[in-house]
Image 1: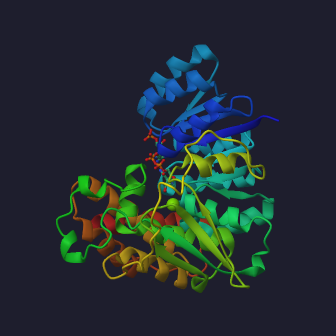
Image 2: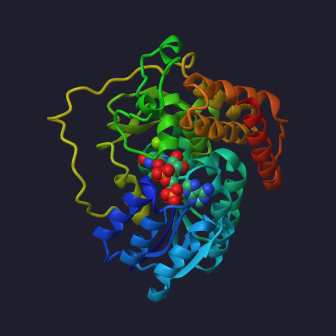
Length: 382
Ligand code: NDP
Ligand code: MG
């Protein structure tokens, strides 16, 4: 049977890799919907090649260009972020790959779940912002989230055939990013170019900076809590610079399972598209003859404050992770804009967590308000 796929954020790093998979598996995968923020040229080229029924270009200034290009092909073109939400009701896609960046994933993911679509989740920020609400919606609508983030895909794969009660803990691996081993004094004059040079992964700018500050691992700790129903003490982070072990699960009998592979996001995307089947791929294979070391270190929470902040947000719950996420989005954008230094990112996050009002049992409206209030305060603190 052909699987019908929607890719939200098709012009990004995850989106384009997902389309590489579809290109190689046209007998098994079909594209129903593609969305982008403002990269009209790439979106048009993708739509011409993959012939979806629907396309969204969020940026209204680019709408005419995309519409004029795709109208003759009978591809319906929409604009504005609300249309992504609306299309979750209309699209005949059965799997929605959420590959947009940041908070923008929240509302479309909610609509996808309400419309009983399977979610292949790359957009970790959605679970960080509103994990409790998303988890409740998944239960209510009997919807499965299949993780695409490599660590969570690894854990998900380790858990196939296991009872959740048998998990003692999970061990999330972190590459440590480009500044592993550095101390705060070494990081004062870090430039954007230094921070964008990730040793193992080639990703979008936001997640690359998050990897350099260890915020990415912090977001992933929170993502894991909601995906696998775990508590703080059950989620350990270990730095593993080679990024070969993508993560591990330790069970109650002391056994540890790990999932290994080359650092290539196509593998977890492919797994999420075909789950519960495992199907053939032509991806480059790992060889133990070429890898002579797998090493492990403790993360440095003093230098990389963001990981400690994420643990704090997870422990206190409520809207604190939503505050952390919004502050971090503003901080990373400001860093990429050369407005603040590298160390200021975690500082801004911490200040916002202290300043934005805490809500212990947030509703969707509370999350929306928290996000905009945090952005306002974060900008005033830049
Ligand atoms: P990119 O920045 O490369 O791509 C983001 C995509 O989202 C683009 O298609 C972009 O469109 C679109 N987009 C940006 N802003 C908005 C918005 N406000 N509304 C709607 N669409 C928007 O990101 P990545 O592919 O690197 O990451 C996507 C998600 O996957 C993130 O949540 C990230 O944390 C997660 N992830 C990424 C990994 C990776 O290897 N890249 C690994 C694991 C998780 P346009 O091109 O037009 O700007
Ligand atoms: Mg990851």
